[in-house]
Amino acid sequence: MHPTKSITERVFQALGFEGLALLICTPLLVWVTGRPALEMGTVTLGVSLLALSWNVMFNSLFDRLKARLHLSNGGRTRVLHALLFEGGLILLAVPLIAALMKTSLLEAFILDIGVLLFFLPYTYVYHWAYDVIRERVTRKTPIAL
Image (tube, rainbow, N blue to C red; front, top):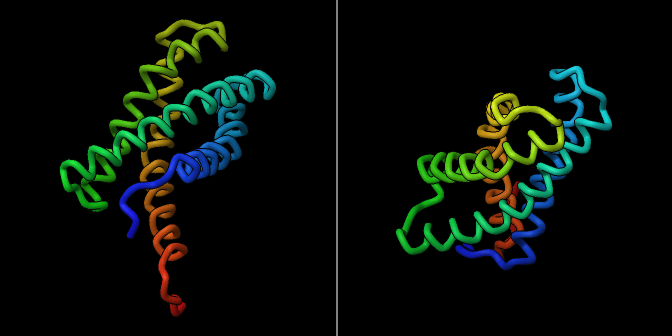
């Protein structure tokens, strides 16, 4: 196992995370809010670009913290990762959502909490699957399927 990832791999991981999230979230938010697809696409893209930057920075820092504290990739560490990542993203995203949707911070916060209910398990599952696939791809010996 390779404990740390290069910045190139971090960018690849983050692009995959955000790309899949965009494909899922944009139509879901149009359905939930009843707002036009172009508006929700703009909001989703804006938050996605913010989250993409946050993802690369946060995961790089989290990997260093994980190595320093000798944390495993177990369930508790993944829950901590998801909670810290999403908590930080809320603080950054709510003002952006409010500005793009021309709504109050409270309304933007409520929408973001709804989205968070999707992203907490999504973050956990995506990063778990990424690590499993990464481990298989980077092994030097062939894997029997």
